[in-house]
Image (cartoon, rainbow, N blue to C red):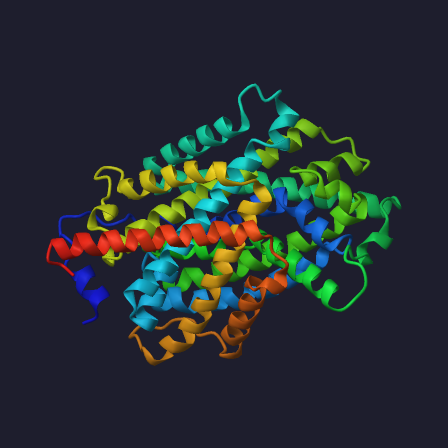
Amino acid sequence: MSTAETAAATQPAEEPSLKRAIGPRLLILFVIGDILGTGIYATTGKVAGKVGGALWLPFVIGFVVAILTAASYVELVGKYPKAAGAALYTQKAFQLPFFTFIIAFMVMCSGLSSASAAARAFSGDYMSELTNNVLPPTLIAILFIVALAALNLRGVSESVKANVVFTLVELSGLLIILGIGAYAVLTGGGDPSRLGDFEAEGTGYALLTSVLGATALGFFAFVGFEDSVNMAEETKDPGRSFPRAIFIGVAVTGTIYVLVALISSLLVDYRVLEGSSGPLLEVVKAGGVDFPHKLFALIALFAVSNSALINLMMASRLCYGMANERILPRGMGRVLPRRRTPVVGIVFVSLLAIGLVSTGEIEGLGDTTAFLLLCVFAVVNVAVLVLRRDHVEHKHFRTPTPLPVLGALTAIILASPLADRAADVYIRAGVLLALGIALWGVNKLVLRARGED
């Protein structure tokens, strides 16, 4: 029996398990809602600033990369339907507790930086369209995270149902953008010549790094499907539900993203998009359709709220899973008896998210999220190949071998300096990893003192 399996076996019998409350349809909506949100609503302009009018190209490449890695996650979650996701797969594949902890910590931090980016987006231009911002944006962002933590504590059923409402609202906002785009095309509006313009001057290396940088940042819009695997213990029949849910989710959102990017570039100059933290509001204003700007801003606020809620849910479940695997102290896996939600994990990640809100703006936090997850995705794509030697009794999806190979290569390229990433992203990620290493050391000392190491 492995160390992880031994630890799981010694978990106190009286500790209540998580409630299986998520059915197949609810899971599909969860995945779609997880992917849709802050990325497309808030960072589209920053992607345009890197690539220019050819805004659609990074989203096409990002879609391909997402599908490659999603296929690996589908195989692994069907094979090991447990909470903890990438951390669990890393431990089973490599049996290196320190490496497992680093991967788990990177995933958790990616969720928290994503939630923090969403909180920043919530207190930005979309909020300004509705109010005079009487409160400081940072305070608004903090109160926003506290409110979502309270919802998360109430229960997974309530949180996922709220996610369904938020998903339908944010999807309606993107459908409005598509409708505005269709109207513009039919009436001869917009400038089609923008769609082939690149911001980088010349060709060759400059153009390559420009496109890769835009793709790396744009990939933030696709992250989210990996969050859903951390809900495996709360999903009914995960082996059958997850393949359909993840592939449908990525396909639907990828198609919408490419169309929204085409419309945004068609109607608005990339420099205008780059200067706004509410770029899709600029599209509404330029579309020639008399749609209420305040109503669209409200829809956008629902969208970024959904992203933050799901990321906080993911991070708290990851804490729960790591505690069960003894990667974090056992107390992190404590469940609220009546609500059966991971109470300690929720409080812990919410406090960290509040701290991250003050470390950067939307672009920096979003790029940090993408960078951390691209590193994790490279490991997951390798893990799925390593774990082919581990056979399980039940049937599960098996991805064609070339897909994880390509997934690992593309993730490494987008995480590398070729992606023209700002230095502060690497610094922020480095600081977070240093914090993770410090926590690992403290946890080891505690376990050794208890005689459990």
